[in-house]
Length: 134
Image (cartoon, rainbow, N blue to C red; front, top):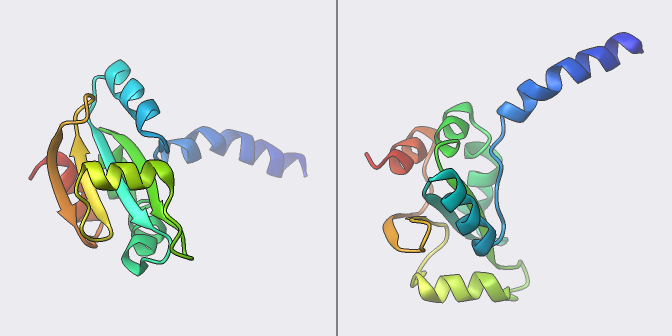
């Protein structure tokens, strides 16, 4: 039992490096972006959206995506729940950035100025290229 506990304690820092630290409010993402001198990667999504769920399940945890997400401030904004209920901040950002489809991935500076966007599903390599502006 002690051996397992020791392994888990030793592996914790490595596990922490293998995930991105996501923000879930625009204001907190802006504050962090200013402090870290980074741009914001914003994922606008809906719970009922299959490609959105696939991004969260299959792409964002991928090591290639994690490395790219480490260069920005990742922001996940749920716009609409499964039952069609709109969430206040999500709807506000969807209107501000003229959301037309899910998922929409938008790069913005710390002031909220849009730099570029990608609409739809992409794999981890495509996501990394989008984040890096390639």
